[in-house]
Structures are given as structure tokens and as C-alpha cells.
Image (cartoon, rainbow, N blue to C red; front, side):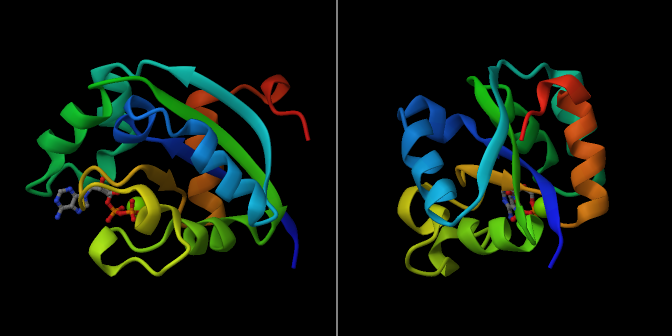
Amino acid sequence: MAVEHTFSIIKPDATERNLTGGVNAMIEGAGLRIVAQKRIQMTRPQAEAFYAVHKTRPFFGELVDFMISAPVVVQVLEGEGAVAKYREVMGATNPAEAAEGTIRKAFAKSIGENSVHGSDSAENAQIEIAQFFSGNEIVG
Ligand code: ADP
Ligand code: MG
């Protein structure tokens, strides 16, 4: 399997509870390498653009409000099959359905406030990474 990059966000519910290190320990424990990372306050236009694919969903407004409610940590993760591997480590969107040992099982509060984002394809990973990082901020 090829070494690839995926895009991760540690969401406001996790940064507020001081869980950045806890999430990162699970990421690293799964064999993924954090090759870029910064803590930012997302703006409303940034959050709306990032989640544009969901703009017709009933939870879109709530999702954008949540994502700008506190700082987030945006990251680039590197590893073999990083996109699929991180989705596995994250667990199901709804923490009630997330498997034991996953980040969302361990930390998520609800289906909306679910602690982490991870790209769903290598193509989307590249698009999402470019929304938050320039090439010289990613150092493997
Ligand atoms: P994932 O983050 O697992 O890829 P989706 O892409 O389906 O999940 O949804 C994006 C984000 O929107 C979720 O992580 C969650 O924060 C929020 N969300 C999804 N479904 C709901 C819902 N039914 N109610 C509230 N928020 C939701
Ligand atoms: Mg998604």
C-alpha cells in the first residue's frame, strides 16, 4: 500500500476538554505520523467552505456553529493507507456505533460533537489539506 497523506481536525469538543494529546496518542499509536499541525480558530466562511458538501443537510448550521465555537487543531497525517487507517482509528460518526479502541468511542460526546474529522478519500484529503496548509508547512 502506498504512503499517503490524510487531513485531520481535532474538533472543538475535544480541544475544550484538553484532549489534543489524548487524540494524538491514539493517532500515533495506530502508526500514523503527524507531519503538520496547528491550532487555529476557524472562521465561519472557512467552516462553511470546508463542509460545503453538507450544506443542504439539516444539521449544516449546527455543524458550522460547532466548528467555530472554540479552537480546532488541523493536522496532516502520513502513513501507509493513511486515509482508510485514520477512518478506522476515528470510528463511526455516531459514537454510539463506534468500535472499542476508536477515538470517537473514547472521546466523542454525540453524533455532532464527535471529536475528530478525517478525509474520506485521497482526493478529498488533498483538497482539504490545501484549505489549511501550504506545502512548506508539511514536513515528513
Ligand atoms: P464523518 O465526520 O464521519 O465523515 P459526515 O461526513 O457524514 O461524517 O458528517 C460530517 C460531520 O457532520 C460529522 O462528523 C458530524 O460532526 C456532523 N454530523 C453528521 N451527521 C449528523 C447528524 N445527524 N446530526 C448532527 N451532526 C451531524
Ligand atoms: Mg465526512
